[in-house]
Each structure stands twice: as structure tokens, then as C-alpha cells.
Length: 290
Ligand SMILES: [Mn+2]
Image: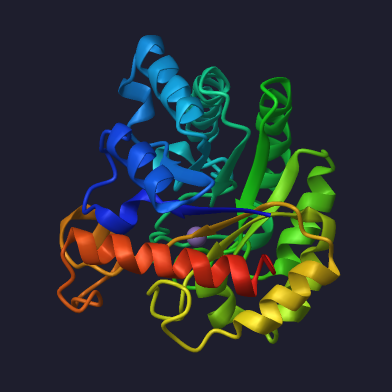
């Protein structure tokens, strides 16, 4: 198991320069920095190679996270949107390949955050999504990238809310690099059991996002971490455990994640660093049995 953190713990915007965070998470002892794909379309090849080399020099594995916009929705019933979405993902996957990033995760079969004021047909959108995810996943496979679909709670998505739905979708797509990303925040809302969901995901589970029920760092709340650790070991999980805490209000991140109060206890950056480091030690012990 490798352990990481999503950069946005420290940020209020999605588009940032990642150099600072490669260095920071290496200093804090993480294996992985997860970045958002949002800034990547604006980066040159030289920028991508510089980030790749910097990560290598610091012993950091980069993973990618992304919430596609409504115009990048592979499950859209509008063929023009699908064509744009496929072009977007094809370009993005080639950028990730240049950075030697081996997995992308998020609501990649749909869009985020879903606008529930717009009517939708789950069965129709599922079928469209299976076909288009298969096409994009072929490109990902050529780039050596696992395409990890995140099961999101009902307030953020409607196609994949549970591990069981995620497995059914992966099986319909039927490609070896289409896998699942489970997230304890979403699981806490949708799943009957954490261990049951991890067992259901089984070999499809590639990445686990961790955070407490209110998205504080692991170890500060009531998510059953020992049960989760046991379940990961029972399936022989050898993927990535990436904490995805959000504790600060404000900015685009605070607004889209719906953080309406300070959950950091007025932490400054040094305190956020200590919280991340403590959560890493906790995660390595409880989940990784290190
Ligand atoms: Mn997540």
C-alpha cells in the first residue's frame, strides 16, 4: 500500500502550482501527491516534464484526480458533449502519460458536481456512459493509465453511489484498466458496511480516498478505520490510500466542496502540516499495518 494526500487540503483553488506540494508532501513522509487535472490543459510539455522530474527527484508518485465539467460528460445524451468529452480525455490522458502518472480517479464516467435541477434518465445515461468510458479507457490503456471510477454520494452523483454499482459498471465496460475509487466520505453515506463495500469492490479497488465523515483528516472522527484496514487486508489491497481532507471554507474549493465553516480549528499552514503528518502515521499503522 502506498499513502498519499490530495493537495487541496492546503488550498482554496483547484488551479495551483504543484511544485510546492511535491516538496511539502515528500518532507511530510508521504509516498503520493494527488493533483487535480484542472490546471494541466494550460501546461506546456516542458512544464509537465518538470513536474514529472521533480516528483521523481523527491521520491513522490503523482496520481491524478478530476471532476469533469458538464461539457466533459461521457454519459451525456448529447452527442456533441460526448465528442467534446472524448477529445478532452484523450488530450488529458496523453498529458498524464508525459508526467508518467499511472492512474486517474474521480467521477470520470459522468460530471461533477451534478446539477440535479436538470432532469436525467439513469438507465439511459448508464448505457451511454459504459460505451464511452470503454472508448476512453482504450486510450488510457495505450497510455498505461488505470481509469478509476469514483462512487460518489447521492448529493454529488447519481450513476455510481455504491461499490456494487461501481463493480456492475466496471464489468459492463469489461476492460482491465477500468477500476474503482472508493471514498470513506461517500461510503459513510451510501454503504451498509465499510468492510462489505470493500469486499464487494475486491479486485476492482485501485484507490481509496480517506477522510472522516465531515472530511477532517483520518483519525479525528468516527469512521471505523480498524474495520477498513482489516477489509483492505482481506482483499489483498495493494493500491493507493490517498487522504482527501477538506477543512477550510472559502474559494472555489470551499464552495464546491460545501465547507461552510472552519473545520481546521483555525489552523495555520504549520498546523495543517502537523495534522497531515499525524494522519499519515495513523493511516500507515491502522490501514497499512506498518
Ligand atoms: Mn474522493
